[in-house]
Amino acid sequence: MSDSDLSAIYRREAASGRVSYGEAVVLHETSRTRVTLIPFFIPHSDHTELAVKLVTYRKQKSVGWIVSEEKSLTLNGPASRKLLKALREHLAVAEESDDGAYLLLRVSEGTADIGDHDPSLVASALTKVLSQEDILEHLAGVDLSDELVDSLRGAIRIREMQSAVANLRLKLTSGETKEQIYQEWCQQHSWAFGSAYVVNDDVRNITASDNIDLLLPTVIAGYRDLVELKRPDMDVLRYDKEHRNFYWSAEVSRAIGQCHRYLDVLHEVATNGLRDHPEIVAYHPRAIVVIGRSADWSEDRLRALHGLNHRLSSVTIMTYDQLLAQGERLLSIVASADQSMPEEVD
Image (tube, rainbow, N blue to C red):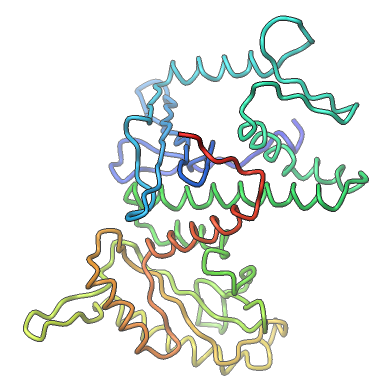
């Protein structure tokens, strides 16, 4: 088996403890519709059954992405195997024929005829193949136009972002609360924190006793900011009925105090670069705390969070739903610049 045949599959226990699930895969997406595949692993006494759920989301202006139940479908183990068999038989066309519908890619001639096949599905398959390291190595030695190279990179990047956003949404909707799970996601997809940041550092120990969740270099100056992650099931705001105002929960207050200490230490030890990593410089750093959920918040509560944030110094509190919304917004900006993404026709 070659390296190109290997891929990472993550399997995690669901909140119910009765089944496990894998990361969602975005099969198709337009500006108004998204289709994802969610694998489920169902344990039996003598085997584990693989079932899949095809979930369709539709975007509504007022609430964002919502599940379209009438267009979603669950396939049990036998049905999933039949689907796999049918796909293999129809996609692995061994030779040309005058009859039937088939997909033909003449690599040697540099031409491709996709017939009546959905261009978005073909593009998805191609970007998945072209993103493999061994394929990219060969592409590097081929004389391709700058426009084609940029298009390929853009398509691959959009696919990666789509899957990342779908995976974060699945984690939240499935009730996942383990902080480590979200830490891994944020380390892999630090772009979700905004276009001001590029990629996170591998370094997390700023001193022998201080280990932070994430260090993010800014695009403009390269100075580091930090991210502190808490669980999504923690409270963010509490309400004082007597004085009719919202205030930080105990969990957020502790996180703010923790971040202020980290900021002081980071500014002290990394103003001219960390001792063992002189490239990591932090000058008057800021901190982002991600904690709790806000999907069902009222406008008053959201407004209170905004106001309380503006009265903090060097620390910003955001919820996991806001992180998800920010990632979706960045994805829409990137996707809107890609002319190859088709619009759905109702």
